[in-house]
Image (cartoon, rainbow, N blue to C red; front, side):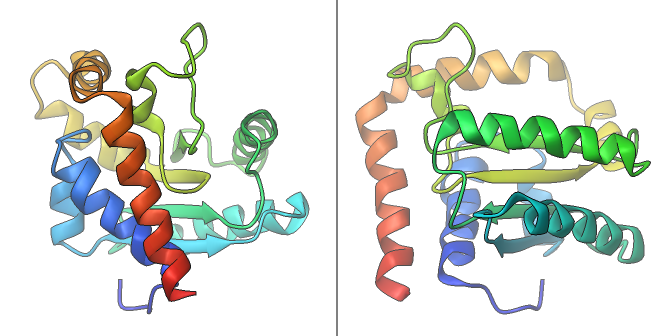
Length: 188
């Protein structure tokens, strides 16, 4: 998108390029990145009410701007604690329903300490949903459905990604996220 990026958003874009697209974690992200159809927004989440308002503002922006396929909301500062993040995610999902966006947009969740339910914290498979900062990915459901319709066996994507992360190992993946965070800190 033409807006200039904050250091955290620039590092997040680098994460999308070098991690998500390069490793084919999301087989649909490369197309949207090449089309410049991903919006990156940094939002303070130290107070939930304005952060949730920012989420709904992004829904409205997507409503008004078909050229934007998806938005990555980077919550910085705020939501560093994973349990707090999960609580915020639940409220955000409920708010989308309350605001009439169920079936129009959905949220994908990413956090530096992401841990799948029933998984050990040090399981490299968790890196499929780990990001440099707490983040919500606001997706257009219609676009997702179109992409999935042309992808063979989309149900296998999560397990394939978990196995790929396990082959790579937790240490190099953690170092990569730390380097992206450091890149943003150096630019702040």
